[in-house]
Length: 560
Image (cartoon, rainbow, N blue to C red):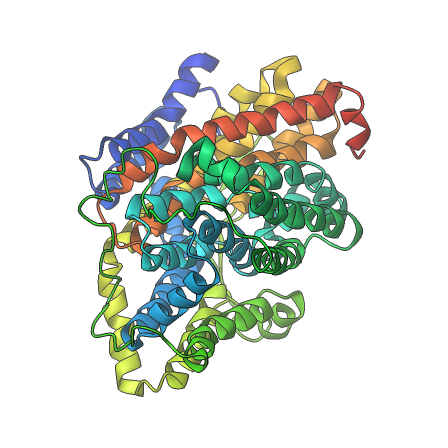
């Protein structure tokens, strides 16, 4: 058994710099726009292996096995979800139903700002709550690009919108993961997060429209933004504090959509905003304002669809919503997992790596078991929904099969990128590189509530998952806060709340966005667009946590 080493150079500064090499290298390559995302991910993975083996003394065999373990977990469940969501999307495009759905959204309002609120924020929050793991960005990005938004706008704004709901995504998976490593009641953790994120559920819709249309454009529709934001934030608080953390996003998003649609029936902006491009110079708008969707094929949509056609156009997505909601429930997982599960301990890696102090109070072996719960994967539910929808759309079985393999070919580089990203995240977890970065944040003393929040942000930026970040740093947050005399519930929740703002810059989310909008090779442009928004919003969350830690009356919000 190999014990992790968190300070191989005997200097916290040098060890932290060494630990940051793979991440910095990855972000620089992607942001440069000169290296394709899948190549950058593979190069960064090789760098992570080298750092783990040669600097952090991890045995090479363990490092390679950890990386391969990450490749598999990258494909299942994350790559599996994306593959099948895009498969369904391509089917609806080929049949012409997706264009009809876009028309129905446009019929609700022709104002691009209101379309953004409805699709990117409210509708996206529903898919975050039901499925998570890239599903909302894939769906909303595809819808926005079909509505005529420029690729950069569709990609970047979908990423910004998919923040406030993330802590309760995939039916509360991040909260459950946090509870599993801290030992705290998930209801209490969910309630504490519900006393942080509603502030940002109000801020993010305003932020979203400000980024798209500018401050003046935002002010013109402030009543609609307020309705959308408040009708999400209040249910988010109430459900998380008085019901449970599992259905927060689903309940809040449905209420938000209903309130926004109802409000739009009685209110219209004085000036209708019809431009699909960003208010600033949009490098994607000039040459690719309305790109051909993935697998566009031949669409046979009449200029104006009938009411019956519009109802049918929504059927595939209603089927997807219902099945994904069922797939995410605990009773369904309890029903199928005992039968359709294959647990495979990774030979030579399972329980061969040991976490030690100060990351954990007592030496703890790190399990490495690939739980192939293939029937309860969200992606499996999406595939079943796509097949059902395909038959509803009158595709032949042969066409469904060929279309699915065509989707694999279209997504080949994206799937490689996602697999490599998860390999990096898994390797850094087993090598202790992530813990070294975490310890650097933990050494900030009185400022720890702020920097501890940014630790959650870093965790999501590294792993692409708020759940993974909570599992990664939840124990460290608990130990450090207890040593500093802070509420461990507060800091555990802050890890999750801060993490949501890292979602927009994690590499796999950016790849999902570029794939959904058919803007391959422009991942660097998307990263540069969202990067500073991610940092500023994360700092605002850190500021709120500082207030909750030290300043009355905010301290009265803290659970102990």
